[in-house]
Image 1 (cartoon, rainbow, N blue to C red):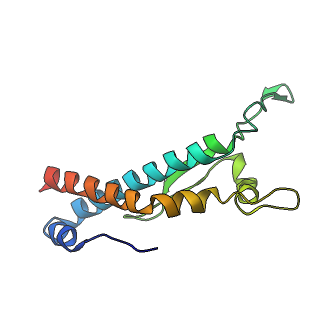
Image 2: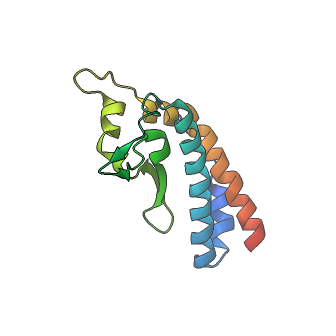
Length: 135
C-alpha cells in the first residue's frame, strides 16, 4: 500500500497553535477518518443475524448484531480506534478470520485497504477546517 499524503504543511500549521488546540484538532481529524471507515465497514458486514431478537429470562436480549456494535474509541489524546463494543466483541474475530465452518470474511481489512487513502484525505480536510477555526 502506498500512502500519498503531504503532511508537512499541516504539521507546520499545527505547530503554530497552542498544544491544547493542536491536540483537539488531531482528535477531531482522527475521529472524522474513523467515522468514514466505520460507515464503509458497516455497509460491508454480514447482516444474517439481524432477526435474532427475543427474550432471555423475561428481559429483552442485548443487541449482539455486529453491524450495530461498531464503535469509535479514543485511546490517547490524538488517536482513536474503530472496534467492536458490547456483546458482539466475543465473536467479531470469527467473522473476520473464520473458524471451523465459518469462512473468513476479511471485512475490516478490505474496508481499510480499499478506503485508506479516502480516510486520510478526510482527516486532512477536517484538520484544515479545524485549523481555520482555531487559527
